[in-house]
Image (cartoon, rainbow, N blue to C red; front, side):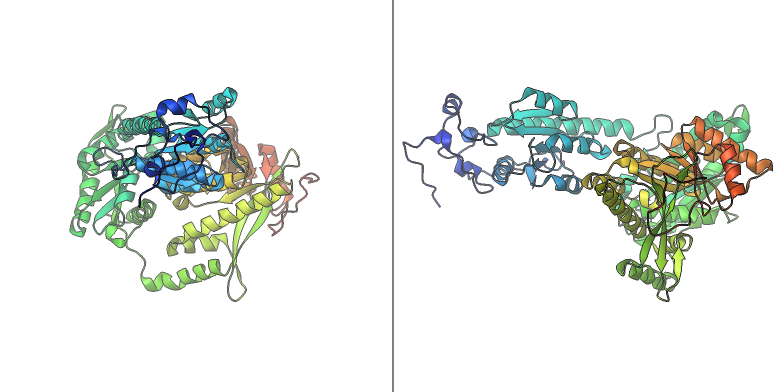
Length: 616
């Protein structure tokens, strides 16, 4: 269809209509020349771009921008004015750039997590949430820390420009802007960001001393390959590290583990390998058939166990425990595969050969249980109850631990101690953890709206926290609800943290900028446990229930050592399972900061404890 030209006496500079999507060349057919556009002032609100540079030939389709095998450039346009958003989208699409529009600022974080844009092109003034606020939120996510943010606005205020640049924006473009200038600005930013991203990946992809892969790089490679019909994941654990630490010290043990990592790297060859925590490693063998998995496990075990290591002038041999999981079992994400291999390593500890393979439960063993838990979720038979955590020095700050319960068909109530192991066996711990966290966030939001803020300690499994994008989802959920990060404390059991310390550190580090706090629960003094106090960005520890009865002897001394060490790290200590005044007095005299237990109040469905007038 031929598009008619405008009348000769029409004033082209006053054109404000917006073209249909992908018709920017045809729409600009009668646009003024670049010189005329510059000489004649515009009227009304500035359009997103000036059409002067748009080519008139609409028969040319530009290929998506990108080099070689790289994906095309992808830009997220954040603009509440639909007409201007469509025009910017059509300009970028016409230049071979993929453009996605988010018209509601509340959808930005979810959209970014879904499409992973190379650049964000954003308006400054939008209803609901300003561009400056969105920039702060985006920069709080580690995965988007280096994503270029370019503002395109008609606001001429230089102070506002300085403000958004200070909080993390990369550039500030003034409306109206010519298409070629907009495209050039975006291309240069994306090229530079991709180049820097490759450089950061190269620098961070290998440990300088061992040559092993960085853990996120390996897990990303594993995730990209799943599901896979072949290959395996190996969880390799070095036994006896606690004894070695006590004898030689932490620094010497770290040097020894570095040597063990270097040795494993030699054995792994082309297979990706990484260090998981103080004493365990992960190896991924893509494409390896089942017949070779056990043979390879023996290579890892023997290659480490038969090697002579030096530590402070002593020659020692290390015992390696190997658990592995065949990828043919149908894992859909790296967290599930790692969990299966770790489960096999626990079984390997009980085997004389020190090797075990993961075998999924028989369908008959878990199908009924899985369906029962799924039915409970679907029928909303889970519920949260809350137990107050009271400051021994007094105060009116409301804080509770959330406790999970589930009502069975016969009316029986099951507590978390029964639910969590069953959920882990049935492969549903992630679903239940997310339900708990979502319900807790709703409570925090309601209390904030009532001007009655509360802090909630919410238990989570490290298997859930290791899931891809779980940290991003949580950060986004907090931002969307307008919550303050410190109102949420993620509660992690010590036994889990000792195994998943690297995973947990990555999760915690990604949420520290949001303000989320962390508590290490069921804490007991040990060299491994003490090392976690400095490794993880904790705010609290909750003592083991055993310490509530530590009225004399070595147990009381260990409790006081734990409390002193925590205080030196700047952590606050919660005394747990306090049932009687004698236990409360023992904990109070040992220097705890908070007390929790039935002596204070039993867990209940309401958050109505009177913190201000509580007397301990």
